[in-house]
Amino acid sequence: MAEDTLFDKILRKEIPADVVHEDDEVFAFRDINPQAPTHVLVIPKAKYESFADLAEQDPDAVGRYMRGIAQVARNLGLEQNGYRVVFNTGPDAQQTVQYIHAHIIAGRQLGWPPG
Image (cartoon, rainbow, N blue to C red; front, side, top):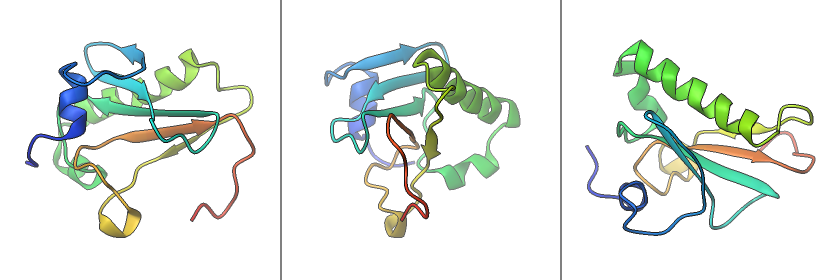
């Protein structure tokens, strides 16, 4: 498991964040370097380093995390116009924090291909 990360500290509320959702399973907060008008990060409270780690986890826990991401998007009112969910995994994808996090990006027309 990765060492203590920025997201560990945010989750413990040692570092302030603009929190948009918190429940027993997930914690969501606004990105400090937003790439769109809405840019929220969603982390599970159970720590995994990256999306790749989910293959080895309890399917129910993974499902609860995915449902949590969808619930955050719904709570933000993003369903009508749409949104993108992005997981960066590893250095080539520019994962900068070794704690899995979903980016919910919305509020403008998003380009394709993304990267």
